[in-house]
Image 1: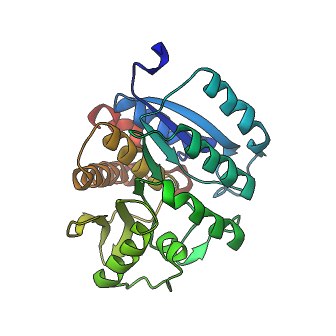
Image 2 (image 1 turned 45 degrees about the horizontal axis):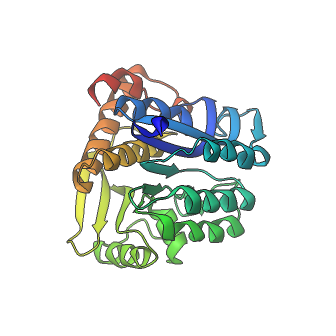
Image 3 (image 1 turned 90 degrees about the vertical axis):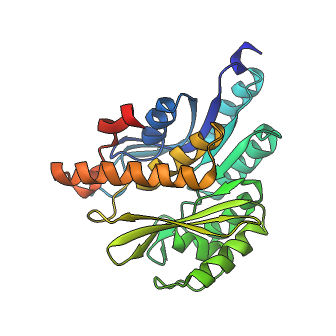
Length: 274
């Protein structure tokens, strides 16, 4: 089909008008990496939930009809990226999407957005967290933070977790399906580490100096680069290093501009260098 002559990645996430997160981040980054980004929104936000006030509407009831049109167009995707999912119904829809659209050569990156700092996000329930596990077998690459990795493996969360314990968590996650896992944003003093696990290879750690406090959307920047690099056939450790260095550069510039924490990172200034 003519529609399938260019590389494409389907991004299943919410759309946020302001605050630099979710689809609003993935669309320019994946495009800058020379791949067509095809968004499938799960919810629409005026600005993300880190702000005091926001407008929100759930897109879940429209997702099946939206997907049906892609089926009629006979679209094929080189990559699929999933992000925040707000209901059991949305998880079911994404699972069906993966069953229908994940072909032999499609790379699925599952970003199991559920919580941070040892806790679920306020909008997330334990039922949702348990159902998120059902998406893990479809992942070629899994990109949890430490909290999410612990939730998925029913491991007690500890911020001072050892490398040996990280290896066991990743091995448990890999037994569910994904060959490649990166546990992102591990705080180690003044540095942030990304712990990389690949089946039948020794683990790797990519380290960057920490710049300021955590900001909204950095995980979306990270996973967007990871999925695009995978479709572009970059090796996994190089891709994690690419994503980490890009985020660090954008964080340094964001700190110079003294932007509010809610506004995310000013990655736009470096898209031409990505």
